[in-house]
Amino acid sequence: MTRKNPDLAPLSRSEWRIMNLCWRLGKCTARQVWEESRETRKRDYQTIKTQLDRITGKGYLTVEKLGPLCLYTPAVKRSRAVGKAVDEFFEVVLDRALEPLVVQLTDRAELTDDEQAAIREILEEASRRSDPSGKED
Image 1: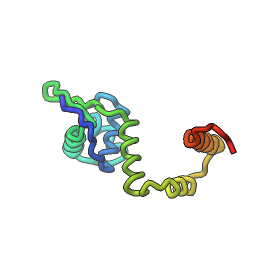
Image 2: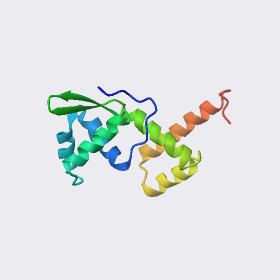
Image 3: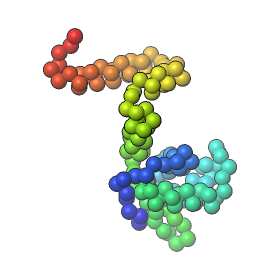
Image 4: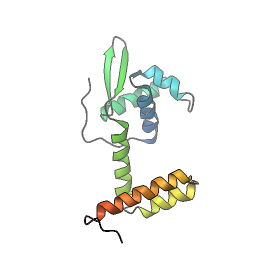
């Protein structure tokens, strides 16, 4: 088994694609990942195997040898990896400013009534948390 890394290194774009397959598949072999990935992108089997080994080295996967096969299992929950990526994006790209993100998301997609209501609820909850007195204006 490979050690879990508490300080996860960022994933590349292609590593994210492979990790999304691994999270969806659960335990999987390199061949399974290769077959699944061929639906969207043609890559050599050895390339997939190399990327799985790199992702394992970063601590996102564990690997168990079963004879000639390697069985890869996600070692990090998807929500943790996504949270880390979002935090890094917020810090580095957005310089801790939320407005550009909200503008981009609302400009690119037509929000449904349900999505707009969910966003309002999130903002109201954030407002309640930032006002400890509980007073409403």
